[in-house]
Length: 578
Image 1 (cartoon, rainbow, N blue to C red):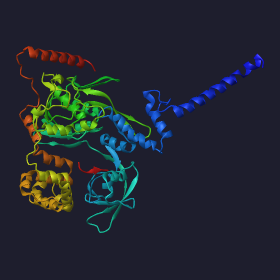
Image 2: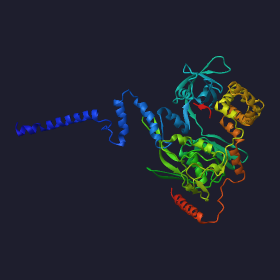
Image 3: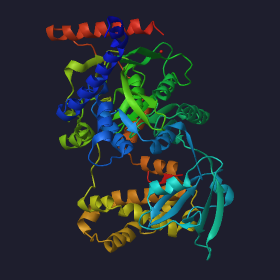
Image 4: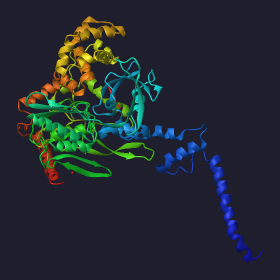
């Protein structure tokens, strides 16, 4: 063969050799490569590679979608306790809690004896418009029987909620009617308030309870303040107990109502998230009104932003027990399939510079979630002295009062949890849900008579004459909890309070229920005493002689004060509803 012909076929020969080499390499990789797969060549693509290998080679058929859904929460749990994954079917429910409204039929219900009982009907909502009433039972949904042991709150809401403008047909059993009543309801927007109560607690002072920080909370607060101001409110109790948080923006807007211009509210900072600061702009409606803020171990996140800003700026007094300790900021990130994650991107810091996130270990969320039990067992709920404050996390307010980071907001005035009257009998009937069951059944049987009471005081006076506790004891006995006279005598007042409170809630609603409970609430009473004594505004600590030990504290206070001045010059229940 000539040199000319050889050069003509050379490209073809090279191509054949390359293909043969690839085939041989692939064969050996598959049969002799063990677990060393060529596609797994770095940590960044191991997860995708693993899923492809499982899908391609695993011994059994695998539902890859289900596998990914289960893996997502586990991966995020390795980061921190508050980075979470929200499946598509739960995202709307999660968002609706903070968005201020959702689409549904407009009823509040509980499931009793495998049947949906309507507790109340939202005024002006779709159900009220067609004639549904409190006390009605929903037994049919879209011509199908909707009762039985498999009935749950989740199943009920899945069938009763729905897009605005869609319809649902209900079969209703009403006590006054022999036959089932049929109603066709067009779903609509149902408002979801985040302020559960706003009223004058006496002639001079107002009370506002906030359940969460949602999209509409600031507007709700402005309305509540306007109503209370019209009644000559001269001081305010803001109740954030068991408020688990919500939108940080809602908290900063609400704090702005109480702080003078230029005061730092909060700042956030993360590895890829530059420092962002929020300052009061001077437009607040209550900049000089005395305020007391109530917190407990259930107050978290945005609640702690609010309380921390008030405390660090010496704007009001914090009363209660140490708050939860969540100082991490989550950013929502949505996926195309309708699911989402809430990824921690920064920490937030109170004006004094403290991060109040309590310690956690990556991947050990169970220990983190059980922290409140550890606090309880350690005695923190009952004695301020049981709380160990970290001196390395010591900061100072603008007046020089010491405050601490590293685990929640420590109140200025500690109020222990009251366990007087607690007995094993009370715990047993509570844990078995018997108080709620009896309260609902009593309310349902006597709804007509109870509805004649115009407020919680009238209903309380009526219930006192009915022997409610004795009726309950007989009910509990029929459910397997034997009468124990000494324990019942010890817990009589708490039983009475719980039973009366739940009946008031069932008939009159959330605010009258809160008003009734507050009459004997030790934390509320303490807050009221502070306002009545004119002690809501904190005072600077008395000066102490400096010694060698104090010098370090003085230097830290000076440095923090300088930092604060520098920053100031810059510019940032029981029933379900469907």
